[in-house]
Image 1 (cartoon, rainbow, N blue to C red):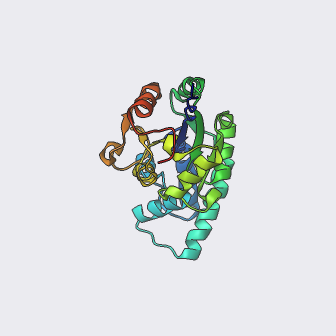
Image 2 (cartoon, rainbow, N blue to C red):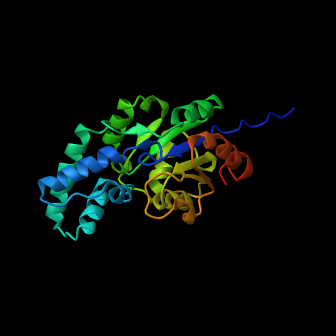
Image 3 (cartoon, rainbow, N blue to C red):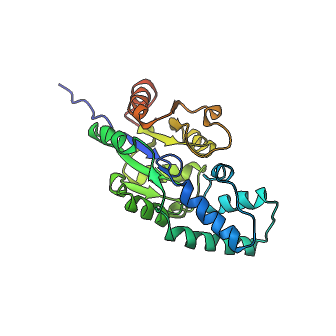
Length: 237
């Protein structure tokens, strides 16, 4: 009797800021502290929250643009370095996992799924944050734009993250909160679940994710739907 090929171990790749962890309080505090040192008026919390998601440099650029400030490349580099240094000191002071994250990971891990993080936050900051929150051991890889030299939405960062954990894109799905995440998944031909509580100035539902959830209690069912109802197949096309 011929042997059946084993089903692949599915990989779930998570965005970090606004998806797994509510990092806005620490990010915005670091941004406003930077602005205060530079004599720039601070940003309201809810306005600044919408600027998160493209990495620290993008956050600073969006914040400066909101204040009508233009800077040279040299000044932008200095501000970025100052921000990273300040943020690293308080990376997990107020940041917390979104409700239900750990229970959802427990449930999915019990089903044999493995996890990775693919974020536009620097790798060392991502690891430091997840270490401080007691979450880093749950992820087989934690990758940032500096890990492979490309940021999201370039699909190469997602492909390299999956390769780093021994997975395949054909048995991968992504969880994110923004247009950047949807665009990354689409470019890599990977299904995506979007959370509707993350950081985006446009509702993420408008970008057409495969599933939309409002709480991590809904993640397991959404994963099941995508694994059983989409082209997550056992072999490469």
